Length: 206
Image 1 (cartoon, rainbow, N blue to C red):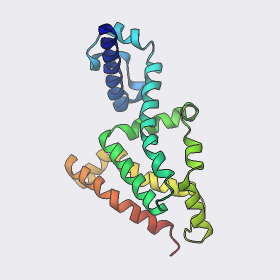
Image 2 (image 1 turned 180 degrees about the horizontal axis):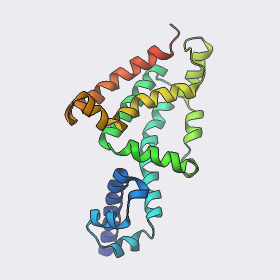
Image 3 (image 1 turned 90 degrees about the vertical axis):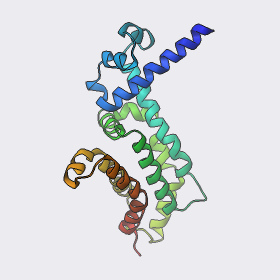
Image 4 (image 1 turned 90 degrees about the horizontal axis):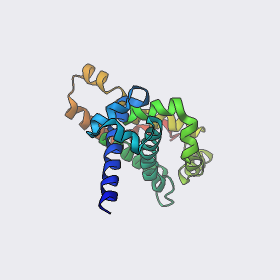
């Protein structure tokens, strides 16, 4: 039983190190040796638990994206919250998620671009969005003439761009705006309240 505990601890230690390195460098730039050094173990031990970088990456990628979408499911399918409330919760949850892992946007965008088929195969992202209460509320608002933009994809592009882009462009924005990390984080927290207001102004007909 003691050996099993050690095994679990070592495996989690490797996964945590891999999460740190993958999020920082992405798949292509990461070496298994980098992960072993981060976990403070030898390379042979890492290969014993995870036989390839690809296998370890798939686990980390799936866990990372699953964690976010699991937090989104109750928001998207809440029958008691309005569309405006859902936008506010999506914005707040996503900014909070990225704030805890500032390297996540680059990591996720890179893998979505180069491995979207693998991602969609493992996670039911498409049916989660397309069959959600959120989408039905959006379509009903369009039908009633409350929203000018009939294409929900345009809406999602705008919402995700407002949330994600500042984190991707952080170094540039900090240099141009002459703000430090603390000031930047304050601005991102302010966007939790500002983005829903902006989105509402963009899509409403009244």
